[in-house]
Amino acid sequence: MEMPERRKILASVLTLAFFVTLMISALALPSAFAHGGHQPPPADFGGKKASLFVSLEPLVVTTSTDPVYINARFFDENTNENFKEVTYRVYFKKDGNEVPIVTEGGQFGGQGFFYDPEGDLQIKIVPKDSETAVARGEAEPQFGGIWNRGGPVVVEGPIFTDPGLYNLFVEIYTVGTTRTQVEPVLQYDVWVTPGREEVIDVEGQQIKVRNYYGAIDSSNYDEETKTIEFSMPFDWTSDMPSRIGMLHTEVFIPKALADFNKQSLNATVNGISVPVAVDTYTPENTIVHFTISKQNLINIAEKVKSENLTPDKAVFALSPPTTEVKVAQVTTDSQNYKVALTWPEQVFPGQPVTFGIRVTDKSDQPLSAATYELVILDKDGNEVTRAGGVTTPEGVSSQDMTFASQGSFTVRVDKINASSESVQSSLSVVPEFPVGIASIAAALAIGGIIVAAKRISLFATGKTY
Image 1 (spheres, rainbow, N blue to C red):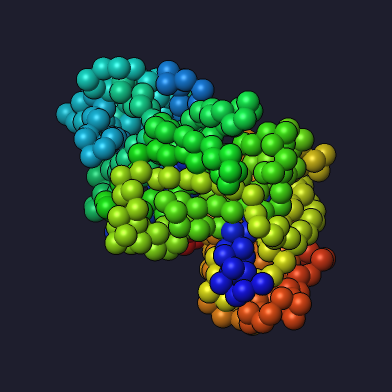
Image 2 (image 1 turned 30 degrees about the vertical axis):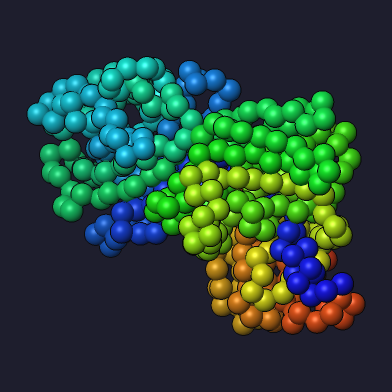
C-alpha cells in the first residue's frame, strides 16, 4: 500500500466516544468545549482556588420548548467546599446579540443578578418567544439577586428557542457577604447549548444526527460511493473555531446498513479528512462521533478559508473504509466503575489519534454525563496533556490527541464521574515504518488507581474539550 494512502486510512481511525454541549472559558483564558458539565481553571481568590463548575441538563432536548436546567457551583478547589453568600450576574448572547435577563429587587434589580447562600445556583430556563427573559423569585435585599430558597430560579424568555450556540456570561459579585462587592469581579465566558436530534433517510433507514450548532440544512446519500453527507450553518471565517475548542456531532447509523457497521470509517469535514470515533456497543446502531480538537479545528478552518471550501457551512461526510483500521481495547475496574479504553493499534507521531472512553457502573449500565479527565504522561511520569470530557447518554466519550514524538506513554483516566478514582494503561508511539514492522505496545493490564473514593463535583480543565 502506498504511504499517502496508508496515512489517509490511519487518519480516519474510529474508536468510540462522546459527550452534550457546554462550553466554558474564564475571560482572558482559552475557550473550551464540553458537554454536560465543565470547570475552567481556578482563579486565585485570597489564596484560595476559586472554581466555577457549570452543568447543563438535560444533555439532549426533543423540542424547542423543553426546559433546560443550568447549575453553577462556586467552590474552593482545595477543600471542595462551596463559597457562601454568592451573588452571580448572568446574561446570554445569541449570534452576538444580547439576551438580557430582567430580575427584581434592590438597587441592582433588573440587571440579571442571582443569589444563592450556599454557592450552588440553579436556574430553570423555560424557552419562550418574547423580547426579554424574565427571572422570577425572591430578591436578596442587598444586591437584589433573585433566589428561590433552595429551588431553581425560573427564567422564561428567548433562550434555547433556536438551535445553535448561546454565549452565557457568568460574573461573581459577592462572596461571603452580600454587603461587600468582590474586586475585581470574577468573570466567565460560557458557551452552552443542549443537543438536538434530527433524522435523515438513507436507503429507507432512519439515520439520527445529534448536533449542537444549528439545524441541518441539507443532506445527501451517494449510492455509488456509499457516502452519507449532511451540512449545517457554521462560520469558518469567524473566531468561532478558536473559541469553541471542539467541533462535535454524533451520527447514529442503523446496523442494517452493513457497509457502515465497521470499526473504522472514512470521515471528512468540508472535504478534509478527520479522525472520528465509532461506538459499536449498542445492538441497534453504529454511533459515529466527530470530535475534532481545537488545534485540528483551527487547521481545518485555515484550509477552508484558503481554499474556499464552503466557509459558511460545516459539511460532514462518512463512507466505508478502503481498509478497516483495527483498534486496541482494554477494560478495567476501579472501585465503583468500569472503564473501557480504545485507540488505534498503530499510533504514529504527528497524526491525530482518537481515544475512546466508555464508562459504566459495576453492573455494566452506561453512565450518562459522567465527567472524567484523560491524561497523557511521558515515560518519566511528566504530564504531556490533560483533556476533560463528559459521557453521552450512552455512556461514551472520545478525545482527539496528537503525539509530537515517539516513545513510551501512559494513558490515564482521572476523576471518573467526579470521584477520585482512576485507571491507566500504557502505549508506545513508534516511527512510521512500513506495515508489518510498526507495532503498538499497549498494556493489556490497566491498573486501577483508587485514591479515596469520596465523590467531588470538581472537574479541572485540560487543553481540549
